[in-house]
Length: 159
Image 1 (cartoon, rainbow, N blue to C red):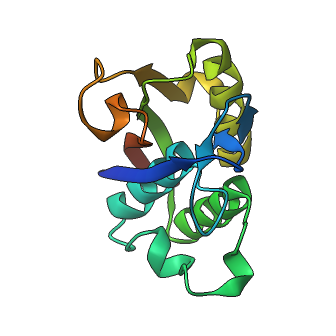
Image 2 (cartoon, rainbow, N blue to C red; image 1 turned 180 degrees about the horizontal axis):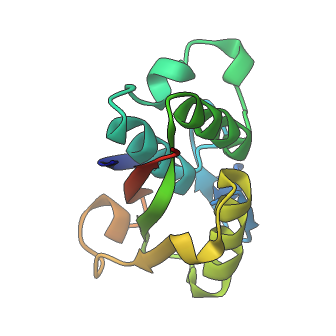
């Protein structure tokens, strides 16, 4: 038995914040604004996993009005999402994610992001795909005002 979920996240770019994607600190002049570390990639992946199992989204598990999650490491939150999915009888079949950002160039960091997500999810790196694209200077991501990410998760029965 399998289930498929889609996740999406977006955050504004601001000065004075670290740029964290897939749990990797990426050198850049701006970072993503959010209640936690604002890791759009991790957030989209978690929402895809939760969505596949009809378990809501990360806002339901980790509300942004709860100070326990202020500045939270999204990879720690992902550990909890993986635990909840396993508790509900499912593990990751595969994840396919795309980051939409005009800058910086993310290709040098893709493997590290994939490895980091696979480690947290307890699966092989071959089950995690991360891609990056620009929007050819169009829209808020193209104008470097923010970043977004989409993810699709195939969750398979652990039995």
